[in-house]
Image (cartoon, rainbow, N blue to C red):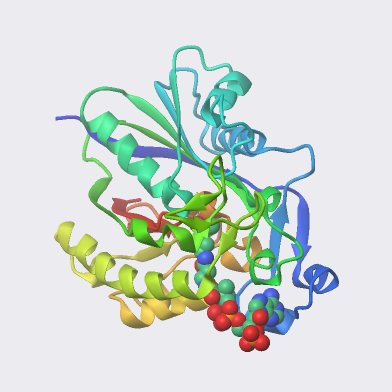
Amino acid sequence: QSMATITAMGTYVPDRILSNADLEKLVDTSDEWIVQRTGMRERRIAADDQFVSDLATKAVKDMMRRYNVSVEDVDMILVATSTPEYSFPSTASRVQANLKIPNTGVLDLNAACAGFTYGLQLADSLVTSGMYRKVLVIGAETLSKITDYTDRTTCVLFGDGAGAFLVERATGKGDFMAAISGTSGEGGIHLYKSGLSSEMNGVPLQGEGCLVQNGREIYKWAVRTIPEQLSKLIAKAEMKPEQIDWFVPHSANLRMIEAVCERGPIPLERTLTSVEYRGNTSAASIPLALQLAVDEGKLKNGHQVALFGFGGGLTYAGLVLRW
Ligand code: ACO
């Protein structure tokens, strides 16, 4: 039986900062409202000529620098994104071209803010099945390019960024301990960006190519769903909540994460986010939170972490890992 281990991680965020003060100049909002409702102070925004494959490639280069690993023998590149620069070719194939990886499969996966944790689940299964030895998993987003900066209910939330993990066949014990996923497809209408169709279940879509969300409904769904599913995930790993060193939910919104922690098995003090200075970066938010925690010395080798992505679909995917 093959096992899978995470051997390297890297991230990238663009240089341009969008602060709450900047947003006050764009829409009728205030630093106080944004901090109180979301916990956000800043977000990073891609340059006009910078697209998601550029961010993804930079995250992989950061990973190669930090961990002194090479990617030339990667068997598969999985990119989770909801903001690809083209419908096709995939973002993963742009990353392949940028990094000149000679013999690799490429695949994008679209599970909105749950994309990165779905990607890790797939990488684990591709490696533990014996099919592949080395899989690159990337979560990357340029949400600024689909954000309507005249809509104060969404434009304060989103930011851009990317994170990359290398998942490899392990010689000893594996790092992946349990996984869970689930979907409420009927809630899809609460968070979308329209594509070829202009309606969903007979309901006309809005937004003209920008992200549309019913924040209240997402909030209710997340707070109802995540605490219960997180408890199930921890039980599936045959662990007690006290054995989880860190809970890393998708950094959608700090106030919502607080509500999840109040109802769930793990308190806010054992939670890692990237929300304060990165905003909601969708598929990139979990690796960005992990990178910040490593850099701050909070997250250490051997720690047991529960990652939990959730968002558009509506869908969620969680996993328990040994760091
Ligand atoms: N500044 C000032 N006032 C605002 C702003 C703003 N930026 N946005 C909304 N308001 C106003 C509203 O107009 C409303 O005013 P009214 O009472 O006069 O009508 C009031 O604030 C309250 O609005 P609500 O929408 O009820 O505010 P709420 O407390 O629900 O907070 C928020 C909104 C932060 C969006 C919240 O609903 C939330 O966090 N939802 C979850 C969103 C989320 O996490 N989405 C995940 C996306 S994941 C993905 O896949 C991309």
